[in-house]
Amino acid sequence: MLGAIIGDIVGSVYEFNNHRAKTFDPFFHARAFYTDDTVCTIAVADALINKRPPAEALKDWGRRYWHNGGWGGMFGEWLQSDDASPYGSFGNGAAMRISPAGLLAETVEQVTALSQAATEVTHNHPEGLKGAEATALAIFLARQRLAPAEIRSTITERFGYDLDRTVDDIRPTYRFNETCQQTVPQALVCALTATDFEDAIRNAISIGGDSDTVAAIAGGVAEALFGIPDRIAERGWGYLPADMRAVLERLYRQG
Ligand SMILES: [Mg+2]
Image 1 (cartoon, rainbow, N blue to C red):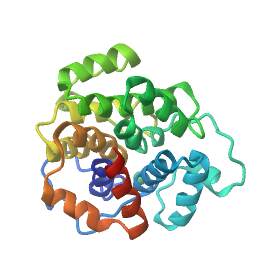
Image 2 (image 1 turned 180 degrees about the vertical axis):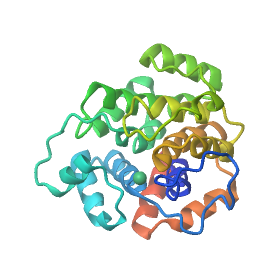
Image 3 (image 1 turned 30 degrees about the horizontal axis):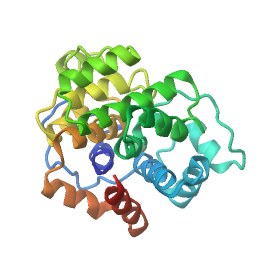
Image 4 (image 1 turned 90 degrees about the vertical axis):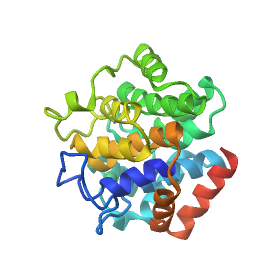
């Protein structure tokens, strides 16, 4: 989960100013900040850990950190309205916030159940549910120490995503896209072909597109695959306010 948050922070300055290369320094840009991806990830963790209805937790955290901005149009409207019914979204927000489900699940069935519970309150389109579940399952399988190639074949078999491309294959033609279908497979390739955590985030930034979200999805999976080097983890923790840190600490005690 910290991996997703770090991906969001590193990607924050490139979302509307893509940097299509793996070389950028420093790793945390001076103007980097956490965005809606982090706020929603914290909300999902809070919901799953504390058995809060996910819609309530998302609205609570989203309104508390409304000023952080970057909200998707329909999601922003949903956050501000009193109506809690889902709106059929297949936006990549479903996948960028789901890492807590992959970390807390103890079985594949639980991955499905937790992912569905956190997703169906907004992203109840089949592609939204699929994008979230595929991301959570990749994290769960990485925790079970499956090799990246096995994770790739399992996800492809189960969800039909094409994960056979490389980052270099994806980069030349990839464009900004906020759907699960055009974000999740690309982000998974960035993590599953990486050599370590930092390399996965650099892969994610290098393809362009919705950089904070691509990197958040890749970062959650990369954390489960490789762990996060202490120096990077410490920087990530340092961005978070106390109420977010408390949720993250509780998740790691439980997960
Ligand atoms: Mg964002």
